[in-house]
Image 1 (cartoon, rainbow, N blue to C red):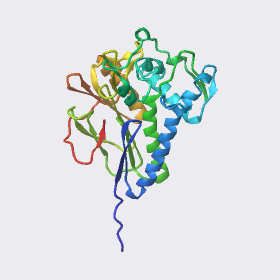
Image 2 (image 1 turned 120 degrees about the vertical axis):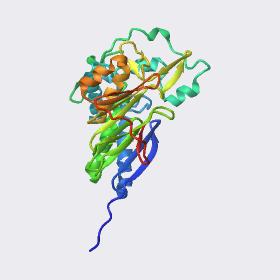
Image 3 (image 1 turned 30 degrees about the vertical axis):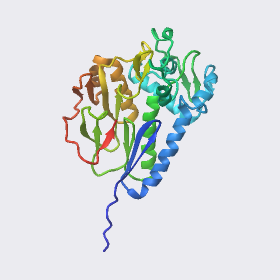
Image 4 (image 1 turned 90 degrees about the horizontal axis):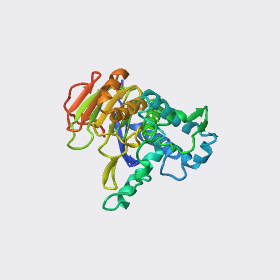
Length: 321
């Protein structure tokens, strides 16, 4: 009798959307097919909602949104996800901050922002910064008919990335019948069967506190950070996580916030909201009943909801950065 060897896991790593991306499958022979699925899904999401592609759907039909326009099923899914995240977080994650973040100088790919900046960074208009009122409840999505009031610009970046991770993981598992882990920057989604939990390394960048945690198949984990997407504007350092109440970067109470949840969308929404909430983040995370890890401005770790104590970092763990 011939005994078949168990399938080997395999991993692919690449850059997408100015992020590090990884894909791990439980059967090495399906890696190429899984990578193709990921490429298609990520390109579709980018084409639907990128702020930096002039041919993206969200920019191409921006004016039509003012009176209501039928959008693609994918863009409708991405907008609905963003509105759900706003609802879960009482508006701390707000998809109508596109104008605010562009006014702060982040109006094109961040590499271009940094490359074209002068000695004091990019120039911004001071008059647009203070007093911004959150307006996500004014967005209307009836089926696929989207209405965005005048003066508002959608920025679906954070939630769209999380939805993309969930979509890739789900499609790879469903179409190929394998266990899969997808990492897009700090967002990780898993799907399908695996004989043991996935091992995930949680560390924002070299020198930051590092831990390894076990992630059950079919669950997700996301890290939001104030350390990476930064740029200089009028002599002041900015980061990309805005407080909707002011339209300015959230106070840097936390360097990073990491949350484990059933979906990457939920994990991302709560990790982003934790940064925005500052010292009140613990109340949000406890109420949501999730395991979370916050790193404060001095590098100290704060654990919530049963986040495990530090485990030693072992070879083969997937990074969350």
